[in-house]
Length: 392
Image 1 (cartoon, helix red, strand yellow):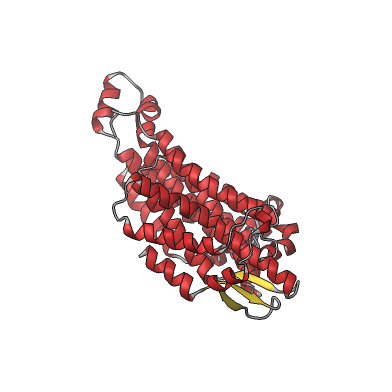
Image 2: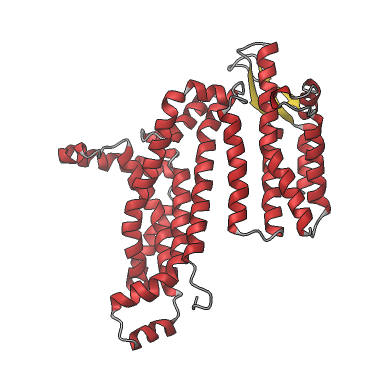
């Protein structure tokens, strides 16, 4: 399937699109056409590397992924190396072509990454994941591979190799606000997770000990999940504006009908269910024999919780917090509609202005942040696993 998808993208979809300016739709340029245009050696690399080698390597990766259904370790490593090299390689190819378009046609020309680039990126991403799985790679190797790919991409962006791509031109136009919006997005996430953990973890402990608490708390939390995020943001605007007007000291703390306050309240409500469920499930799966043994040793209720229940429940609790965190990173983008700012503000500016690359400028950092946090939680989950031989 990966081979068919990759070959279809190479043959029929454009690698880049070239438009005379930002307001005009671009014309697609296939990977083969890009290769013909850039057939000369890549002088910037200091080596004679014809661009057609990139296409041959792409086809080789697809063939390896298709042929080795049950790959030995060396074949999985070959797929891994080729796919990991081609992920930043495709970006470098697009940036090189964009630079040539800017020199030969017009400095106002916009060269955007086309659908073949995104499809091939997905195919190569899945090929790397599949190769790591077949190699039974540990966390250290997987983290090294993904960090290496990420660092290569960041080097290409920072070195100026891709400056003529439309995406980087949008970044240059918004460089004065980009870092601030990233920090604002992180602020929304942190301010959401703090009350979520302070409220959700005790509630999870409570419903684990009381069926009545579970009966009263879980249905409202389930219902909140069904409310569209935009609707919930809108519903909170009026009561928060009224509170700020009735008690001015709340307004001095930043409480108002728009901005950060309704965003944090709404996102906290959304995040409670996975945290509460994770805490409840984690505490419920602690074996009764462990609790009986702790009581037999004379432990108090607090000692049992901190020394027996919490260590064994930590992996499941972290899974709930992980879900809530990744969900918050994505939903925080919608909060820009009520003036909360963040990367969603850049994304919606692109949507309202029909600027696809500006949308990507807001979306891609959100995806990158979610992936980094997910990797961080995987490390924490491994650290929180009970020792070998301990009850689970």
